[in-house]
Image 1 (cartoon, rainbow, N blue to C red):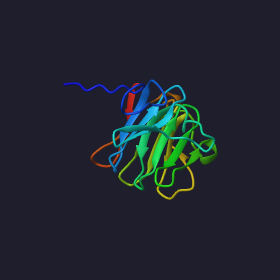
Image 2 (image 1 turned 120 degrees about the vertical axis):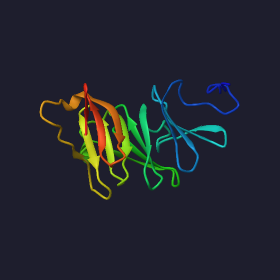
Image 3 (image 1 turned 90 degrees about the horizontal axis):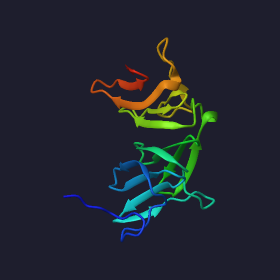
Length: 173
């Protein structure tokens, strides 16, 4: 049996956009939704949607393509053109990470925190790695002949701890 929630005129509140690109259930049981068309980030808690706003009152993150929860409970947003937004739901604060922080690109295709708490950011210009407590990202050199612009966004951690990526027609680990 399907259940359908109206995200525009429904009893659960209104989302800040009409298309969801990402969905995450965090360790506290909240649902985080990444929106297209500049809708930013929304949260569903206690069966109510609410928009997360930035300091200027706009939708946090603009176009949010992917979402990951860090081990410390912060919510990391991969955006279409702003790099990564780190949102702290406890303090309702945010910060931005981009090329100045070593990201290879600012269009984020996917994010993954591995078991060692390293963040892997797949961008339209390659893969960045942010080790726990590191000051910035390091670009991941790819095997010869693979174009970093061909990163597909596919990423997973294998049972043995290795992280695997989709690069063009290849699976790389």
